[in-house]
Amino acid sequence: MHQEYTVVEGDFVNAGTASSSVKKTLKQLGVNPQIIKRVVVALYEAEVNAIAHAYGGKVLVDIEADKINMVVADKGPGIPDIAQAMQEGYSTARPEVRDMGFGAGMGLPNMQKNVDKLNVTSEVGVGTTVEMEVMFN
Amino acid sequence: MTLREIVTKLNATVYLGEERLDEEVTHAFASDLMSDVLTLKETPMLITGLCNVQTIRTCDMATLDIVVFVRNKKPTDDMIELAEDNDMVLVGTSYSMFKTCGLLFDAGVEPLY
Ligand SMILES: Nc1ncnc2c1ncn2[C@@H]1O[C@H](COP(=O)(O)OP(=O)(O)O)[C@@H](O)[C@H]1O
Ligand SMILES: [Mg+2]
Image (cartoon, rainbow over all chains, first blue to last red; front, side):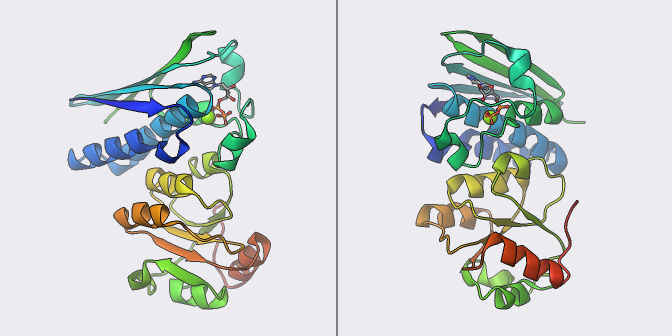
């Protein structure tokens, strides 16, 4: 099953719409609730990043019998040093992002902890792509 | 402690979930940082000063469904609508985060860590 969502720059109110919808789909498919939580927490953090740090983008979700694959691809400034960005506590978030309850540098570490595979690629001045995979069993 | 007892103790207003007030609450977690809430494996009651749509979204993702807003923060209609979809309880108190936590801790509501 393939799903696509659009993430709009600066649209904090709608951050999490993709994650919410994926949650409903996985619930209907009878996926283990603990696994659903891991999937949607990771996707939500990635969605927030595409809104907070980039100029929006796309969320592509592929659900198979035994796993889910998620790609959050944004147009944005990119990440110059991915290893540094992955460190807990590292954040360049604007005050606006902090006002939303994010911006403590925990997003990428949260993704890492919740998914089975995480791959972040980025080109400065072009954008960032976050690919995540979670196995259902 | 039941939610009803918590509401009384905090002199709180119930914005949503009146029908769930007889439920027991054993654990609570207090934070304004949603990334921190998203690290929880457990599903405690959330005490927070952050009152926006992301508070409700975070609860949705983290499967938390009881929120106490401190310092007179009132949920907006959009927040209540979203929370309704998830059968949540939303209450608000004029007390500070510190006082709210102190009163509930004293009354036997347990921390996670
Ligand atoms: N999609 C993105 N585009 C550009 N920079 C990003 C993106 N995602 C993360 N970053 C960079 O990595 C840092 C850490 O991200 P994260 O761990 O999610 O923490 P936070 O979002 O709280 O800052 C961000 O502050 C930002 O500098
Ligand atoms: Mg982030």
